[in-house]
Image: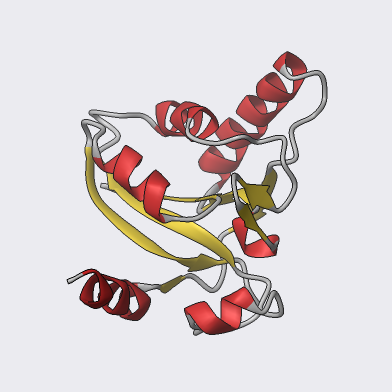
Amino acid sequence: MEIAILGLGCFWGPELEFSKLKGIYKTEVGYCGGDNNKTSYEQVCTGNTNHAEVVKLDFDPNVISYMEIINYFFDFHDPTTLNSQGPDFGTQYRSEIFYLNNSQKEIAEKLIKKKNEQMNGRVVTQLSLAKNYCTAEEYHQKFMEKRR
């Protein structure tokens, strides 16, 4: 099993889309790239933590490759809007690929470059080493309780 961490706007929609893909065995919503290794939804929404809303994927590379996942990443959101997706605005909604090793970094660099060529240089997707990932499980539980 391997892990991919991707920021592509509000994490709920991407989590659902990725969970449908064969080879992805677990999805989790969270935050990554910020200044601290612990944060909350309320803190992230201030824009002061530098975290992005992300979906963390546990996947089997024998079933779905990291390259395929990054291609889906570009299909599931608009990589040309800076710090926003649809009606959501703020730095936490940025388009960002968080890599965990050099292989992921190289694959993401190639695919960002390719997508940027296809989109006439308008891609704003960032590429960063994964740091300070934390789960949004507490927020997820509160959200689900409100829906009941």
